[in-house]
Length: 400
Ligand code: NDP
Image (cartoon, rainbow, N blue to C red; front, top):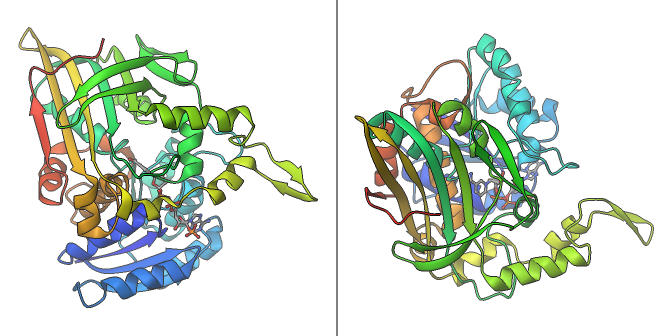
């Protein structure tokens, strides 16, 4: 039925590729293209013979628009799935515009030198995508992604008006290392060492990093410390969920992770300012990434579960209502199925589902869209079918 060009072959991409290959009825052909072609070739070798999906591979520098355009013209995909890094979002969108092919990603654009992620750069492409008659689906991972679809689902089925959203991201996995990150260390550390913020009464409220802490008793996991972070889906949900008064995002961190991070910060290892070292310019955070364990290597070692979901409050038929919807994912079960831990799994599965929505034409329309702007029902059904079943509660423990 459709052909996908998948850019990137890291933790998230490897899961999405496994899932596309499980779903050969929709993805009869994929091309895996990344900076390091050997990773693409190794994955192709692992999957061939186990799937009906035809797999090809290519080398590409996704920072280079002419190179991307040439590759898209050669492959002729129905969709480009950008599973590289947020720095490549705009160049890949430019190449999709030039070749008139649909686009999908899982993280919003972030300039490499400012550590400030927001949607304004990608939203600026709306008119051009509309004129070209193609669709860009932004944020088709878990958060953003599934959490945003949860919000659209709550809005559609359970509320006349949503007043508050708390997004809770718990990773209770243990990989046995003193310090490692579950996805790209550079992106992860930039996210957690930034100031926190939440949306309240029409504006952003900024906090110091890790200033706001709560303890929450997560279903199927138990009590964990969680901290308020800035997170990108807050920006689009604040626009797309009408009548919203407050949106917060919390992520769990263990004490050991935070102590290591503080120490690395204090000695300057998390800085993105280049420094001179023996005649070379190096960025301390990039050097740190090079010495930390590769997130892809955590798969076989990680035990425990993740629980990511959203708690909504609001009004239905004149009465106050609470609603909690979440997914619980088991690291070891993910590894057994696709050879990756749950953080990559929970992002790679929704990337495949978002691509399926566009390839099958279930979601369509020219322009640039955040995922909560489409009908959530087919995506919610697909989550149950493709490995991320969700549960709901109408009387959840609340976060104060
Ligand atoms: P990885 O670092 O594991 O993988 C990134 C991949 O992109 C690597 O294969 C890398 O190639 C490739 N790449 C990097 N730069 C280029 C380039 N210039 N040209 C071509 N390929 C390039 O990252 P993850 O898989 O952990 O994360 C992928 C994306 O998913 C990120 O944008 C991240 O922010 C996002 N994410 C989203 C989540 C969500 O829930 N929405 C959660 C987790 C992640 P090489 O092998 O050569 O390094």
